Image (cartoon, rainbow, N blue to C red; front, side, top):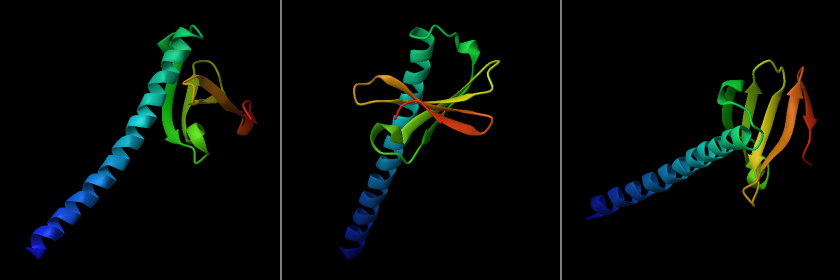
Length: 105
C-alpha cells in the first residue's frame, strides 16, 4: 500500500513538472509563430527575408519574459519582439555591432 502511494506521488510530480515544461515550450513557439505572422502580414516581409527566428526566455517581467530574436537578410541587426497582454506584437529592442538599443521601455 505504501509503495502504491509512493508511485502515485512520483507520477503526480512528473506530470506537474512535465506540464510546466510543456507550457513553456508551447508559449515560446506560440509567440514565435505570432511574431513571424506579424512580420509577414503587417510589415509585408516575405518569409525568405527572415533568416532566423529563435524564441527564448528573457527573464523579464510579464509577457516580455517570452521573446523572439529575428535576423533579417542583408541586415546586421538582431531584433527582439514580444507579445503584450493585448496580443499585439511589440519590438522591444535591437542589437547592432554588439550594442543594444531599447525601443520599448
